[in-house]
Image 1 (tube, rainbow, N blue to C red):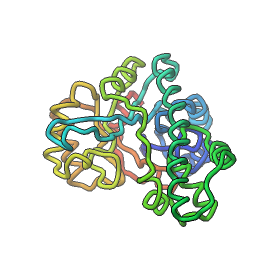
Image 2 (image 1 turned 135 degrees about the vertical axis):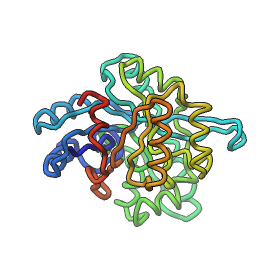
Image 3 (image 1 turned 90 degrees about the horizontal axis):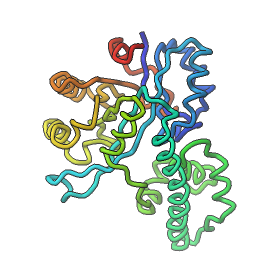
Length: 290
């Protein structure tokens, strides 16, 4: 059985492919169980379910929520951005729908402020500033939640930068604006209230939004989960394309000791297309009755 419970789409967030293309490729790759986990967006879930049924692929509702977490022993108590995966929830649960609608609106306003900050940098470099027309073009390219990757892609299209790495390194990091804050307690309440399970995403990812932002020590990462997360989460994403064997096994052992479910997926944004390449065991799907 081939399982991938962490895939992003163009319809809902910052994936490069539409749902139609993702499911056609998943079918070609013989993926049996799949979840679309767009960032702070559940608007594509009904379409994903329909496509899964069309291709005979088992489907689990998914979403990736960004949470601000603090720990008094790290970062002088300042918040760190972490991602949590929600699975098996009711996509029509009103409090969840309402919250993510607010997040979506906030993302639009945040994008406008980021463009204002980029224009400040452009003025220093004597470059043409972004206008309302540029914002309209970027918006037109977004099917789901508006984020910095969409601005990066537009900068590439206009020849301002050569790739996303340059866009972030030169502009989008220094011009960033804080996201709408969501606490772990709130995220847990929303997903569990909708009948779902909340899972800590890619906790040991050295290059992403992870507990590595607090500390590179896996032992300390596990202690953080035990001290400030354990009551709000149901599981941990152990299999991820940037988790090495030691990281994966450490988190698996911890999850077993604490009675947590375990999940895995490629975190595929179609750049490159890596869905179905992470070897996730069959019992992961069985935890959800799939």
